[in-house]
Length: 412
Image 1 (spheres, rainbow, N blue to C red):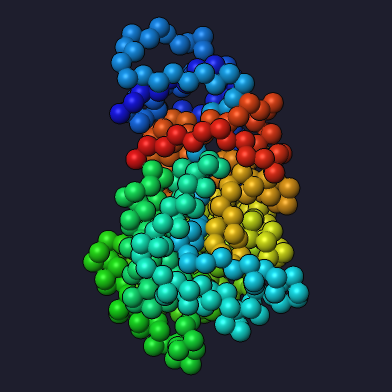
Image 2 (cartoon, rainbow, N blue to C red):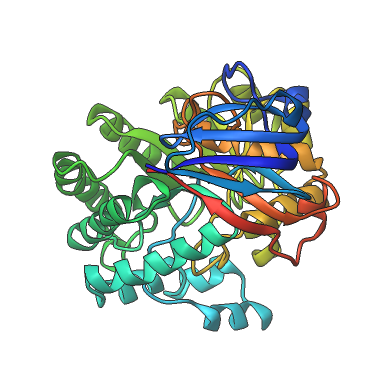
């Protein structure tokens, strides 16, 4: 494996000397940057870093790539902990429907949305889905993403959910991104089960979960707990079965309404509860007293023109906050984590440092990857971004229409 020395770095961003968990509250604004720095990578791991004045002479030039980052920043790659990157077709027709006045929920109720994606996915082979997904992975890598969680949920049948998860397993093997897989069979009720909802939940528990676990296809189990989708009671039943089978919970909750799903997620030890565009004091109290990470998805709010998660209120209550893309064909057709950072600053009033920590270190912990990724720390995997020349670190969030990434370096 090639060793790398990056020298003359304008700013080495996200340095954590003693990693000890995700950042919460005021600590989310703490971002260590070493100016005029170097970074050494050996066998895919961060081996040494510091100011250029501490760089000793090089004794072994064998298989060494030297990169001059004069005027550029080096930082940990983004860790995108919520995406639906495997899908069959885009849904720009529904985008036009929303412009004409239909809401996301109304489109779903008339057979569009998730059900639309499920119909299209059933028509595609694993090979076709894989080819399309690899292109999307290359795209998000070009914007600086080094780790990503990918959900199923556009299958909604035993065969199609297994197909999606098998594709994600292929992506894990072929892509240089670090990938986590989530089983989201409880994304919506198929039309055939609209009047037999308990039967569909039985199908998830008895016919989907066992083969998924037997083939090692998923790291997590997810449920869309929302009005017109899955109730808190149904969420509780599905998570109980998933946890018993060895899957960790990550749930969609509070996107349009508050039903009590946050407390159920915390009860089951959810790694994260995601969306949270709607949030009350009861849910805040559950999150404040837990290790469950609150994952906000600002580009979904942007695209659907719905409220943004109350990030400042979360931080004031010492909740662990992560940011993710929600990349999917219906509500967020973008996996650009730079844009996520810009939106978090502009619409959620986060500082650039807070947004970056929520997208890197805390995003890593939202995928149980915090010991491996998300910061510049000795021994961590050297998944890093080298930017183009930038006047300052804050420029990353400020320049929302520009890709500031020159190169994303990843290791398996």
